[in-house]
Image (cartoon, rainbow, N blue to C red; front, side):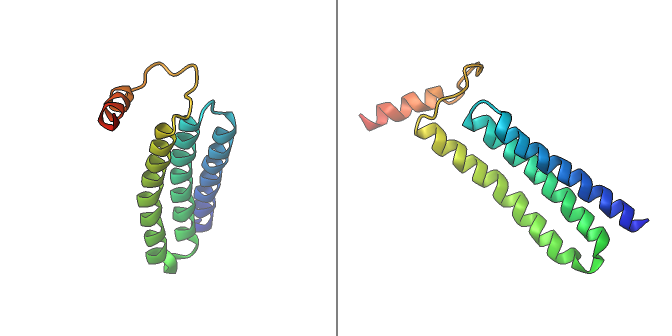
Length: 113
């Protein structure tokens, strides 16, 4: 029974990881691709790690450490990538309604001049 639960967690994690890959292909611009990739891979990785914990209970401490590093590095790296893309003026999709950082971009331009 425990192996079945572990397998279900791993399968569900694989589905989320697949959806992340699909999101990278289907999203219209770099910003939405970063979001799709980060959110889905974080959840997918967590589910796979939980499934592995069911299979190998002795690995729990190591899996918790891996989960901690994934939870810390994925949001930080996606934020850094998004900020870098915004600063080099990567174009947004035409369907983007508002640019919440437009005022910040104008302030940065005034400071440089």
